[in-house]
Length: 300
Image (cartoon, rainbow, N blue to C red; front, side):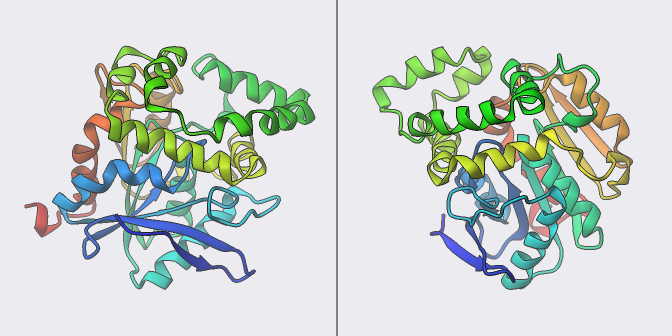
């Protein structure tokens, strides 16, 4: 694992990122979930080193170490990625997106089809603004969408109220109680009992909240808005992974997304939930990703 690095954008804003895995490996841009930050990519470090993969994990604007960009849109993100890959000196790359990172991966693939060789979507968020029926979403997400439509000021106040609590680091002795309070699927709770996995997931969330409530909320608003493109516009190869026990986004929603993507290989995994899927299957996900658009000789 590397230390925090920064890239300055043309408007003077900075983007913080960290690298994991093999520094000389196949480049993969990591798109973290929500609420989360760049250190979620710790989940990839060991398998990426084994497979010869270089993981570049940036904080999105307003998250942790990256500058807040007011009124940003999803369409702004590919320019950030272009700046990152240009500064790091490579042209072609792949993308790994977890949960809320999915729309950012799709947007980048559409904007940079000649450079993005493939994307892996793991427990990915669907285009929520297009949903007629939101029953397949986590109840908290349904509530937030409703408040965003009817009481946006109340929702903003809620974000600011919870920030001091969610910025705290949970003591080790209280972690079992926290997992019980979250009412997780058994497969997710079991996976998060691993200390390294717990740190990757919850420390990345804490860092996001510690950055600013405004940054976390700006990220959340992206999901409630139309993305500005159709899934049918994604022409690069997509590897879609989804747990059949996922509570955040039901497998039914993932199946609908897979049918709309022109070049999609979907894997719906038994006894896997929103957290356990990337925790337990990361090596398999990464190996499959770097085999898109032709095998890499280091994995032959």
